[in-house]
Image (cartoon, rainbow over all chains, first blue to last red; front, side, top):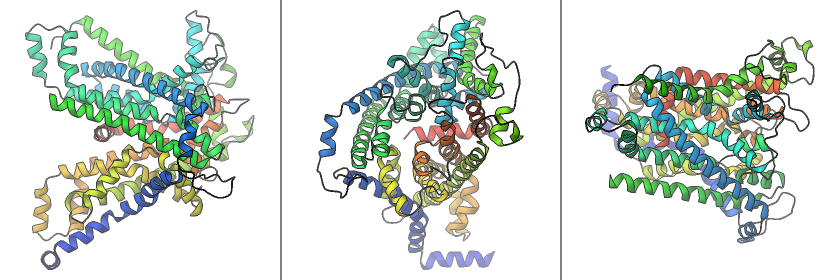
Length: 305
Length: 285
């Protein structure tokens, strides 16, 4: 033991800082190599290649400037996929926030079995997105699905109703699956904020004669506001990245096709690599911009408080 | 706080609705997976299976093969299950190991470029996967790593490393420095401190990082759709293939879905505490 400790101190006295520096560099080098090769280089490459024409079916990769970007402006298909994505984002963020906050405040009220309820609520998030999608594909199935089964059971005329025949109901059906999967995230974040509210605030409000709805509006909501903003950022980014649900439920149907499916089709089916990359660059920036707006708002809100 | 009976009934009604919403679709999948195909379109609908069968599972797993009616899927299914386990487990081990070593260096050591590198790596949390997908595909083709375990696992590591690193650095930062200083005074070296003191104390954090990486890799679809088309095809890519244009085999879909659910469900049931703490640490970027 003393020998070990002696050599340890000697090493520290001898090379000291340099040894630490070398070891530090050594310890982070796997991260550096992985990220450089698989993220940083491909990212730069995406931006650079989006300025060229790259198509495995065509010879050469000439520099085309911003052609890939200007082409987006006259791409009618792209326009409707942007529209779809926008609808998904708005519907999903609103639904996840409203129902998520409601669900979090419900769970916050119970003491018995709270962990079990929370586990049950988180489960949909933990499942693979594709599995969620096929689960709901089966529920939406016209002839034998659960949804039509329940509606018919209630005496409504929904026998053999096809939910994906009409754009509005198809979009809502895809959104429902996405909300089912992502709402747990909102619940977890908002619930944690609710649990950190000190009990004496509610006590004080009660002594002042506040009713339950008043307590919710005047004590709970203001104190979980930044948590709600964080969860809305997550919800927005996740809805932007919607792919699995739309691909499994709607396939390549233009009516439900979000922007990510469009990128996938342009790239890996039409083999327009550089156009796909230009699209990726644009949607990355839009997604970053939206996150930034939320983050700045949260920052300002928390500073004002 | 005093709660009236009326209020309690309302709360528990709400909780019941929430539970039906969360678990109902999963229950329905498992129930359908043990229902004979002939019973699927029986109306009025039965919410509990009227007849019980393991036929869908035996078709998937290749037990009692002579009962198979249609195509033979069990070879594919077994391979896909194995592939999912191998790639997710390999990615998880590698990702947590690499990020634990790095997170310790980022927290406690000084070296040039430390903060810049950390900032760059964590910033990629905000960069969506498709921003790198196409060049990555070209790189993987050049290196002959398409449709290999190594290729897919490495992509998962690069995808989940930033979150894991972020999480573990905050865990290490919260550990008492005095403990490490005492060990250092006793002559322990950096690596001894890391492996014998820091890592054992960071158990919950390591678990959280491992869970998030594993569930993420287990559920990936777009990445393996492109990078694991054949030999390393995972469950998530195989299951939607049961949906073909002319015919959808809901028996196979619900049974394979139920099998794909097992591991995430076990994680949520037994490790939910770590999962929640990981989600919270990850969400407050």
